[in-house]
Length: 410
Image (cartoon, rainbow, N blue to C red; front, side):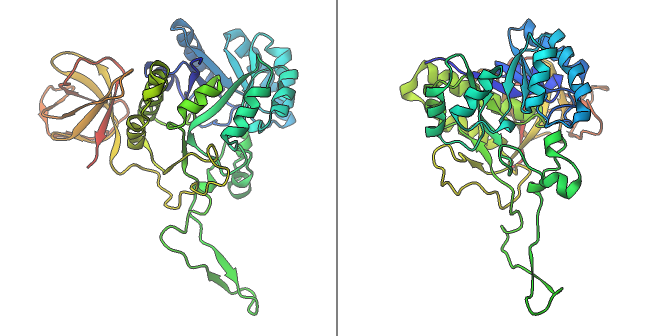
């Protein structure tokens, strides 16, 4: 068995550093204007910093230019391609055949990765992209394990394969959806999805004998989110995926928080490493327990095990976790009092969990005392009134800068 690459999202330089800290081998990021997450905070200077930082620590960065481009986008595409070639990014993720041609001209030193947006769901399609210059294909999420295995067995030997293992599932076919553009004039295929499939909808029917009279379709408490899907989670299936020989395992979520990255990347990092060390005793439940603390929607294996799987829809429309939330990030550790950048309200008596890199077990502790960072005075609670607000507290174990704290809400 070969160990697959663990690939994490990076919506900003800080998020990239968090992903690397918690075990990602590589991150994927967007350019400032030409990826499918243009609302992420990754501007060109941040991208440069991310690539330089990653290469210093022996990691990789892949950058997305995976829009379906109008003709008036190609001048900017050429500019971005030249920039990425100069920055020596490790790969450029692309879906549009026209953009592939531009990359061959303007970024000849960079590997081409075919985005999941291109709907690669067969080895015939994989072979086509290989013949047209692709180093890697990112499979469509609609595949089951038999189809993935068939692709792995029939693809060119030096064509790498990447697949999603965790994160949001798009209502459209591998993300190729026009619903957002139709309803909100925000094109998903140009990086500005309004996530219309996550909205609550009311459904009405028109009486046949009384035109214009709309009657609401009755529904129960789970009947308003008619498009929204659960999130994919393949932590249990890691053994099968590794044994197939898939080259890269991808986590979705460039708009997610550093807390999300720390929790999810750490869980999969430990899962992959533990399986490689001791395949016979792989126990997915301890990793799933950590992922459950981070989820905001239900979890599903989607079509991986069964193309007839009906456990996909998220009828509750949840966008929060009732039990846990982002507590803060360590800015400076000292044995006495450490400085914490808070992300939600913290109070004396709260239970925090310190997420430790390379360790699936967290360090749980209660806040006994809090101190104002500026005055040094004892306080009972602190609210995040401004960006970068800090507080001081004693940590139960030796910790390091940028480690993440999770707060139990109940």
